[in-house]
Image (cartoon, rainbow, N blue to C red; front, side):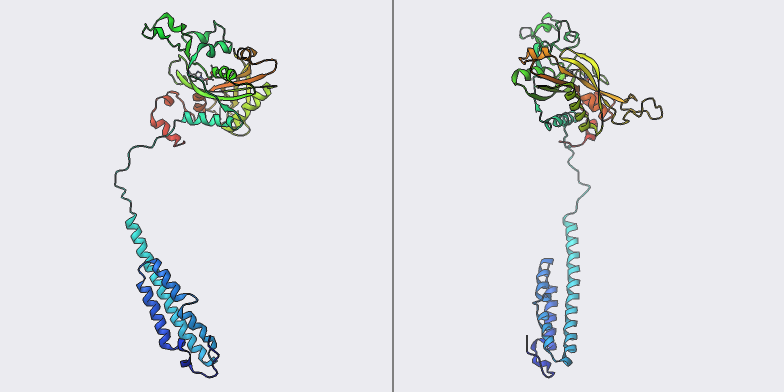
Length: 382
Ligand code: FA5
């Protein structure tokens, strides 16, 4: 900065001469006009309006002028800086308009062009729901276990304590696989029911397979496809899905079973929902029970209340989920597990029926017919 002037002689301060100020202003205006895009304008802005620009440096000289000269020089510099800022703002707006117009043209979408008509695929809601149920148990430390769909009769029935004359063993309930020698035989062949091989009628044979393969403690969840000779109708299909749960450890009781069921129902349908057990019979569990959950829609409020009918539970207040019980000691023994030392619980239920009441699906046939108009509303869950 120059030394303070004692007398008024503006000519002595070169940077404040009127023609110098005009030159600085004109240079700035020319630089803005020459900036072809916003990046170039940013550079020009730094060069001509920042604290080290010629006009800013000239402005600093004013402080060294004698008082009578300060006002005149200040006015001159101030007017020049105002002109520079105005020109900058105008050019900025101009360049932004140009950029917007260019982007609109370059990125225009022709909505009349034909789109890719191949629809994106989605997983079937049965698959995603079955995985969601399994995840609830995996989060509790259970492992996934699997077994074959073409199963030995021994695993499907004998190991599970089905006596030889149990009705489920009849050919009108179970698909028997023909023996190798009889593959070309007549459909009514007598050997069909004697091959010892069936399409598994439930996921419970995985219980026996797991107990033969692993030593307790065993905590497994077994999702899978099962087969029965049921006709396809609104509530039955010959091919459906079940999820089985098996826990075998020291000291397990019905209370553990009930707590596990409550946790599952709350994880899948909402907090505070209860389950109840009703006595039932399965050869492979003792005691056995049918498991219901309180209706997650009306929570029992529709029972005896014609003004509030509930489609989900048919105003029953409860929804039947599946079968369960304590693993029958005969099953433990058949699979080499000491029933004096270990006890266990198991339950199994049909995924289709659960999906039906969870999404108010009225006809099971919709789930198996593969029509995308049914699956599409379930979205792209993967
Ligand atoms: C069983 O299959 C037992 N294995 C369940 C079990 C496991 C009990 C472990 C105890 C311990 P059930 O035959 O009731 O039980 O069938 C279970 C579920 O399969 C039923 O609740 C129903 O939801 C479903 N289900 C049965 N038949 C069909 C069918 N034809 N179509 C669709 N779902 C069916």
